[in-house]
Length: 123
Image (cartoon, rainbow, N blue to C red; front, side, top):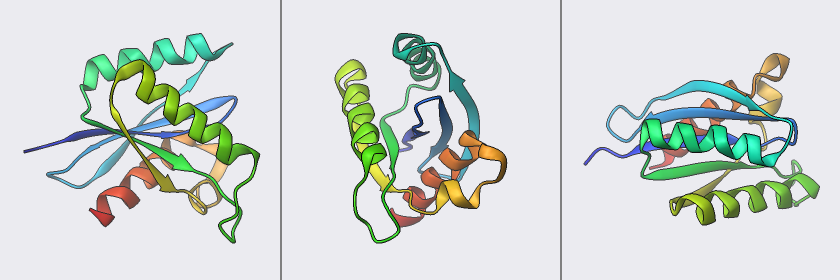
């Protein structure tokens, strides 16, 4: 059975979003969500969830290069927990240590694509 997956590269100002599925095992950058506040961002996420009907949500988990957690690690975990609570979807965290660094010009949607591709490659 094909599973559609949405992936998120969480940031305080912008959230990158990518989509993929378990058949093609390919990820595609979708969009960058920006909003004045969390409510605006979650409205945009809700619209994407209604459009794509994902079975799974993947959230990038930022850590220091040695794997130690930092402030954004906790914020990304909180964001993932909020996604789960609001949309009743399974959330999986993926180590994103090097994705944002390897993406130029702060393209958060491309970072989300790399996070999702990493997840798909491991499954």
